[in-house]
Length: 348
Image (cartoon, rainbow, N blue to C red; front, top):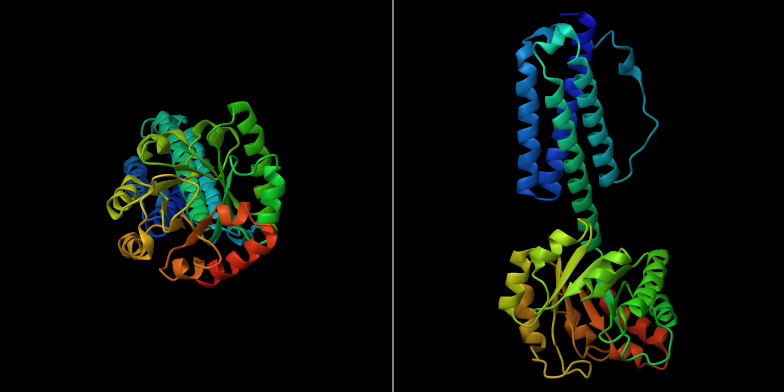
C-alpha cells in the first residue's frame, strides 16, 4: 500500500481518536451523560476496528518529526466549552471524510468501505448537535438564580408588558416569565416576541408559561409547565435540546418525580398565601426546606413572596424567588425589584 495514503490515514485516525476522546470526556465529566458518552465510546471503538484491517501499515509510515504541520500554530482561540466541542467535532468529521475519500482508492478499497466512514461521519454530526445543545442547556440552567419575575398579563391592565419588564430588569431581575391565560395566540405571540428581544438584549432568561407553541415560535430560553400539562418527556422530545423545562410542583413527591422525569428546575409553591391563584396549598418555609433537602436541581420558590419575607425564603437554600404581585402592583417597580434582588442575590 502507498506510503502517502498510509501517512494520511494515520494522521486522520489520530485526529479522529483525539477528537472523540475529548467529546467523550465532556459528555462524561461535564454533563454526566451516560448514554451519550457510551455512544461516543462505541463509535470510537467501531472506527478503531475498521482501521485495524490495515494492520501496522499506517503506524509504520508515521513521520512525526518530519511532518511540516507539526509546527502549525492555529490562530483560533476557543473561549468556551461549546466552541471547543464544535472544533473537535469538525476535526473528527473532516478526518472521517478524508478517510472516506481515500477508501475509494484501489489500494485501500479492498480493506476499507467508504460508505462505512460516511455513515460514521453523519453519526458525528448528530453527536455534535446533541452535545452542544446539552452544554448550552446546562449553561442556561446555571442562570436560574436570583430574582425571577412573572409578568401575568391579567394583572397589568392597559400597561405595556415591555415597559414593566424594562423596570424589572433595571432593578436586577435575572429571569422573566410570561404568564397569560386569556389572550389570543396572535396577541400573545406579539407580546412574547417583544419580551424575548428585550430579555436577549439584557442578557437575562425568558421563560414562557404553559404555551409550548409560543415558546417554540419565539425561541424562548425555557418553558414552565404544570401538573396538568403535557408530560416532561413529551415536552423534551418536542423542544430544541438547549431549551430548559421548569415544572411547577406542590409537594416533595411531585418534586422528586419532576426531577426523575428530567425537569431542569422546579417551581415550588405556594410558600405563602397569594392572590394570584385560588385554592392553593400553602407549604410554607418548612415544606420548602424539605424539598430543598431532597432535590438536586434548581428550585424557584413562588407564592406570596415580597420584600418582608424573601430573606427567609432564600435562607432555605433555594436558587431563586419568583415574584408577581409584589412587583406588578408596586408604585415603583424598579425600586421594589432592586430591594428584592438584593435579598435574592445575597443568598444565592
